[in-house]
Image 1 (cartoon, rainbow, N blue to C red):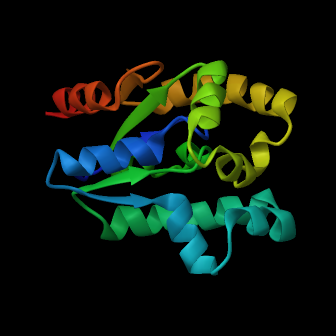
Image 2 (tube, helix red, strand yellow):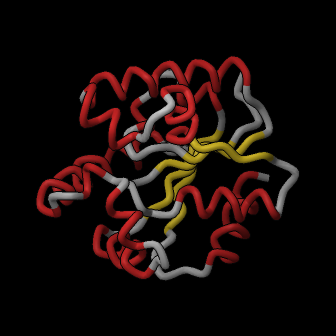
Length: 170
């Protein structure tokens, strides 16, 4: 049975955490972030996990997190890491919403953030722009494929995005 969770997927920096926090204010749901869960489970930053253990190890932690979410979490907005959409049990966790934006739109959004330097620093896969764009182009099609709902967030007010999402999940 599908759970009453909202799973936000999309490319890194698209605003999944920001949208999740805004949704909490307008609903009776909680919010959690898969990267935060992994960091607390490992007691170290994602960047360190990638650097020391590698991507395969990190993806395994995501799998462990996905199983926990499926078995233990309900009535929650879940913001995810950029690659979390690959989890086999994603649809069992809840309704999957893809936050869509162009690559340029995402970079613009990150650069506009008050803590832009930190936002870029904590995203190891964004260090090489050319590689990041290649990854973006691959993932966009996959995000579309797994999503139950697609919400274009580019150049939109946060309030409009929240209204759009809440209107589509009712």
